Image 1: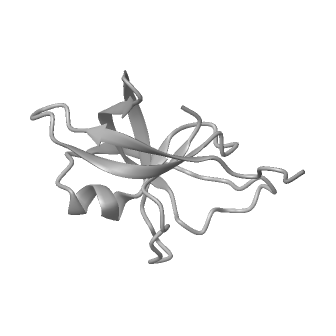
Image 2 (image 1 turned 90 degrees about the vertical axis):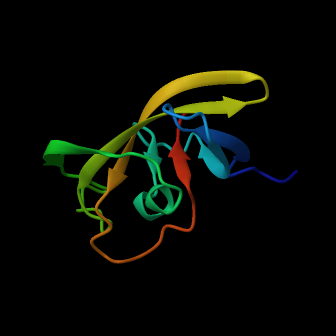
Length: 109
């Protein structure tokens, strides 16, 4: 029997202002304590981001500083999956290491 270590699904992330959306691959139940989305991806697709008054430090499971940097922005969107829609806020990291995460969204939906 093969043990599943990751669950990826396609969901649509929709803008609140004009209801335009984009299909993304999302990692479910990653162990993250919130929803995270790639800042470069959201900028590319024209989503409106809200800058946080105070950035939030991000720590890995082993308590080390996360290389992607602090959470600097958040975004509120609709997530659509198989006829279900949910309005959520997602966090975006500064991307200090200059890397692209390779995913659009990760978290526990």
